Image (cartoon, rainbow, N blue to C red; front, side):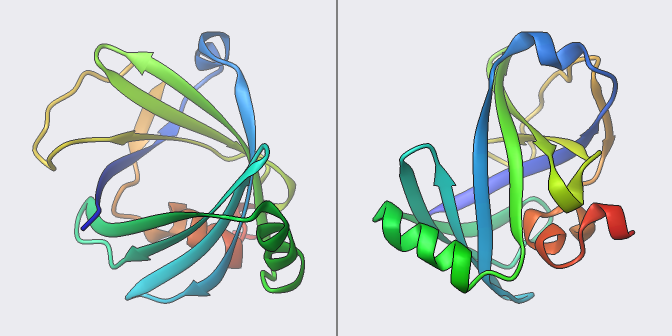
Length: 153
């Protein structure tokens, strides 16, 4: 059984940009419910179907499966009313990997950082460019952003 333990933060300034190259992500949601989300994601020539359970603090069940790229593109084009478009930067910082997402289109102007942890109580040092924690604010989940984009808040 897959578990995801992840904390999310807003990002301050631009110092993080010099630390990594961004990779384009396109993703949409087939289902966005409090109990579960079902996501289609395309990164380069690879695609995934991901099912996530309800978030409890920073933890939830997550199951992810590689699917044919053509199927994923068709799902994004025909079954997902809003596609989230972003660049993801993977930054190694003091033994942890931070994923910084720079959003575009209707979520332009939003930059978030996530860190996946082995346990909710794992301690870590934050880089200077990490701002306010938004882990428990559901507005900052990609699923929410797919329904209510940042530029409409």
